[in-house]
Image (cartoon, rainbow, N blue to C red):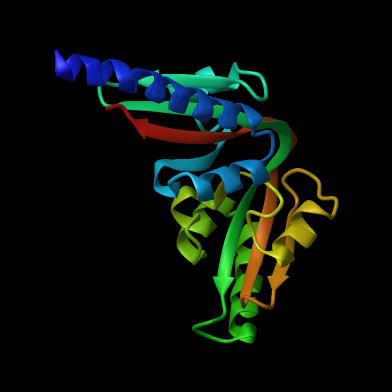
Length: 210
């Protein structure tokens, strides 16, 4: 009987705590608000995520994309309650390239540029770009035949962005990028035009259920 009374006394406190948490979540409207919230409320239990509609195909991602900005989704297990709040929704321009990377760190700038000229000559002779990428590229995209997948401004280096994104290039036309700061020399082909892709920034926060 005494234990039941204690439980009844604690229930309003627990309900108040829940309401306070949800009110704080409802008050968050920017990523800055979310960062502040996470610093104040056990950062290990929360995180900001970015979901991209072409890259994230899970059931959770699909559910979140259906929500409007500011809306929440709540999931529960026996021991945990997790909130997902959509902080931002936007269309971001992405582009696809194929690249061959020549790294001058282990050789010299002259050697890297000479190797690039050799590959350009082979490409002009009819060799496929993807085969040349697999054979010569020192970048992680080599095994994909140089395909970067969909990337946006800021995903690569500043030098790459300045030439690949900010200059006009026709589809399938080869061009050069010299990233002197990082000692990388590129052969690049734009394979897809800039395309707006929906992204959402989501605050995830979990709390234990007693």
